[in-house]
Image (cartoon, rainbow, N blue to C red):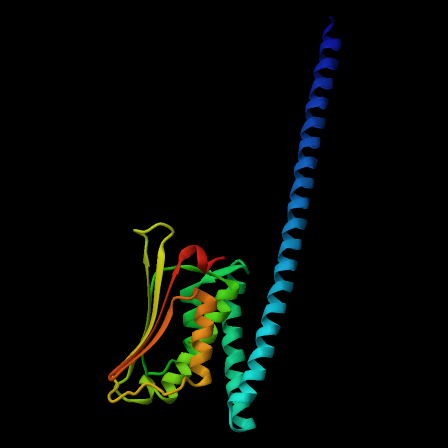
Amino acid sequence: MSGLDAEVIGLRDEVARLQSRLADAAAHREQDRQAAVAEQDRLTFELGHRIKNTLSMVQALASQTLRGEDTKEAALETFSGRIIALARASDAILKDSWTTTAIGAVTRNVLAPFAHPARALTVDGPEVAISANGALALAMALYELAVNAQRHGAWSRAEGRVAVRWTLDQTVEDGILTWAWTETGMSQLEAPAKYRFGLRLTEQSLKSAFGRDVSLDFASDGFICRAQAAVSVLTA
């Protein structure tokens, strides 16, 4: 074989290798494109699902709020506050994956409007994920608890304190989250003979977020709302 033939064969092999690389690159680009389209479809579906759930929740809140307040002005104020709480929870969801967010982020976002130098508030707990639907339900519970504390509970008294804490027990299979809203620094507190709508909504919302293990307990010097759930329930 002459040197020229060898050179031609070498060039031909190099062209074949380049063609193979180009084909591989094109295949990878197509795979990336298909993955991007699939992700876009997933996000579009998730967004549509989230919008439907949120609108259903807004509709229910509007109906309940109008029945639960004495005046149109009071109903409008309460309804606006509840919508803002949902919006703040949605902000936390959108900053994450659209499907889950952190309990801490939801808690801090929703309670931010209630922050005041004269109000004692502690928020503490590990980073734990909660589903988007659970986050919206938790937001409603937090808003109702904060409003109740402001009108009737700890924040209506100079010495009152509110603490929102959650812990994660990882010594058991699946992990157990214990969440609590605690109000202290009150005296002669009496449990209501009948739960107001806000407390009923709190209980219902926490059950939506955490499951059935929810309790609201009144004592002479304070109030505590507890919930417990397996970690798998939180993101289901």
